[in-house]
Image 1: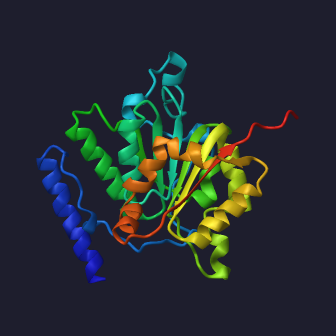
Image 2 (image 1 turned 45 degrees about the vertical axis):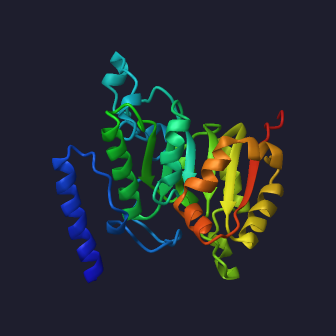
Image 3 (image 1 turned 180 degrees about the vertical axis):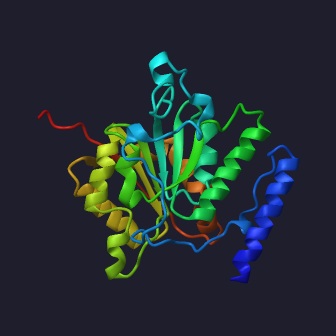
Length: 272
């Protein structure tokens, strides 16, 4: 594939130029493009922890690593963070939402999950460059990893850990035989309910009305979720960011398309 070879060569040139500029040069998207969607059922070569306690977050959030005690220093377990990751963007694409939310919620650790290799690399390079450009004082709370959310979400997050989950412009999988690959389903909603703390919010947005109706149907049918009112949703600053700052959102705006938004709050667990 000559195109892929050329992109690899261009990335290597960029890395060389970035190193000369002390890592502060933003990556160029055209060197990292892949197919718009990946098959979540394929056996991708992914790394994931056996459990949330086994996940080493230190290299993604170096400024948030807790000081080691004597016992922890001699332990083989990963170094803990001062606080947990609590905001997740599933299928984060090129990282527009993460980059926009990071300064708005500077005290919250947020993570992008992206299944495509080169797109993940782009977001990681982007965050690294933004940290450098800001003298290491900003964007330390944002990170991205390559992961398949449909298979391994519980491997990364313990029960009630998350406060916000974003599902922005997911693959609509129009054909009926492909609906099983949609990122919102009865089974996956249960996994979101497991990771999301009571009172936490799932944010959804799409430009495909049929997919919006599907997501609404499945979240409203799930006993762990209740819909957030339109007035409350419009008052949430994260909704404005979600509409305007993702790459897909910008494309829809350029094409003068519609954006369908629905937010769902995690209910309290029943007393049993």
